[in-house]
Image (cartoon, rainbow, N blue to C red; front, side):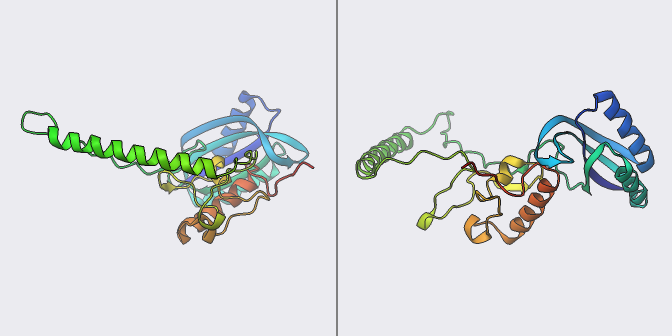
Length: 234
């Protein structure tokens, strides 16, 4: 038995009862044990599939024998109400569209004396340093604001990250332990306005993460979660 994640994109005209019955017939052929089922429901497709602009998404986690996969896929291909499907090994990603992030390090508490209170001298010095640093930052901010012109209005496309020499840099935040190919919000940060994948020299990520990113974006495009190209309004 191996753990799999199956994503179904079914006809949006199907009701919940009809979807459950169809899944039962599919899984009877596949066998194994169903560990999780998540109905996303009807969602807008990133591009039309069979002239349809919406689809019913269902994500299933199952432990099954690889020998049953060929017959299972043959049944899916013959089903006219299955618009698209994807079968991948379950690497621990949740059924929701969220990636697994690393925990931020805990903030170190101030040292305490024997009676349980922070030492007054250290606390006074820290407050004085914080006050001086805040005053310096405020003066520097006022000087920069006076010299710099007004910032142009932000576009409605993917967020721009300004870095050295005007280049974009990777999204600041907790490190991504496991990139979920269903996490459209995170994947869109690594795409250009034309829908192309940003190179590693621009995003400043590791080669391993860049390979994971390419695989995740290709899967999301196949499932119509992301478009292959971006449409521009004239």
